[in-house]
Amino acid sequence: MTRPGDPGHAAASREEAAIHETTDAPRRRFTWTLHRRLLVIVAGLLVAVSAVVGVVSVAVFHESSVARLDANLKAASSRADDATGPGIPGDPGRTVGAFLSVPGQPEGTLGGIVIGGDVTAAVIDDGQIQTLAPGAAQELADVPPDRTAHTIEAGALGDYRALAVETQPGVNIVLALPLAEVNASTTQLALTIAIVAIVGLMIALVIGSSVIRRALSPLAQVTATAQRVSNLPLDRGDVALAERVRVDDEGTEVGRLGTAFNRMLGHVASALSAREQSEQKVRRFVADASHELRTPLASIRGYAELTRLHGGELPPDVTHAIGRIESESVRMTELVEDLLLLARLDEGRELAARPVDLGRVVVEAVGDAQAAGPDHDWEVRLPDAATVVVGDEPRLRQVVTNLLANARVHTPDGTSVVASLARDGSDVVLTVEDDGPGIPPELVGSLFERFVRGDSSRSRRAGSTGLGLAIVQAVVGAHHGDVSVSSEPGATRFTVRLPAASAEEPASADNELGRVPADEADGVDAGERSVAGR
Image (cartoon, rainbow, N blue to C red):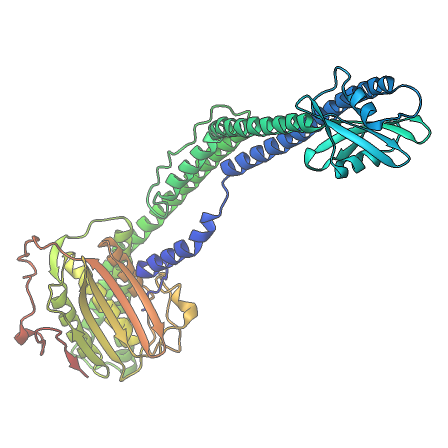
């Protein structure tokens, strides 16, 4: 007999799932879906294109505006040259006022005459010619007379485009037009392009999100279908895998994916059907063979007992052989009965559904185990609360018996074995603990499998079939419960959780439900009652 230890069952599986959810939560929080990635890519491309178009447009507009201003500046400079006349001006201030007074000169125009490094400059302000500040006047004096427009900063007046013309050696006429209007127009254009780009980006994201969502809807169908398939019970039984993905256009990439997914589901359904048919044949063969073997095994055992009861003297070796035949026939009968039970459970045959007092079952099973293993310390712990479940009493008794026998067979003499019951919400929890050497970690994952035997260092007796704990798992599962194990040297615990009977569940006359009387439980007291013995 082996021990169950599948860590994917019971509370262990729930705890592991909770851990995975906890550790995966941050990862999922920063996961980018395909829909989101496509939106970000589209937004990035739109931003890049809008930025390039905006920068180029603003730059071209600014250059063209500056070019127009330079043309106006050359025309104004030509008018100023004509107004100056030949020769060196006797009165530079009057001369500057003269060419600034020429019709067509815009507001804010700067004008100046540079004679031998001395500059006389003025500005048109509100239609009046005002003397220019020395700092701005010096900026005009520094403009080279190359008949090319230059950008200067005229102090508080702002940026200007200035052009200097040498009328005579040592005499330069300088004229400057403000860049304020050009800069304002450029800024307004840049702001307009930015606003239009932002609004266009938002509209494009809204429309793009709808288009992308519609384009990816077949993928969402594939995901939903895969999730539904993953929730189907595919591990046993005849699986009706009818889930399919609707494919509207097989010519697209997503359509081809849906078609391939449907084809895969068809192959999986065929494989599962073939597996189920094969398992049905095996189960039917095991059940039929077990049923047919019961009669000849009973006959062998009967003839062996009849031979031993023969009045005549038999040689010692014949007596020994007959005894071995009898004992092996008993062992084979137990094996056949276990195989037949597992086959019936695999076929999904319903068990009896009667109220069962699990406390009475545990007390009686521990009493039997104490008689079979007097060299162990046995103890029962029962709670005050009712421990009634709905199920098949013989099968539940077999669960308790197998767990106790497992603890007895696979632990040395003197080991303490404690069987306890408790209520945990809507469940009744049965635990069987021992302080034996424990289960090797490499065996824990396979202990529920059939015909798996415990490690030889833990087993003290030969003859284990490896079906006892497989029956425990099958019977507990048939009662909608679960079983788990935790083991380390000196502390091995098997935990069985079964749904408790409802308070309105009527007591069955067959098993005489009720709490175990104190005078029938070998010293079982109220509260946390226990039975101990050697």
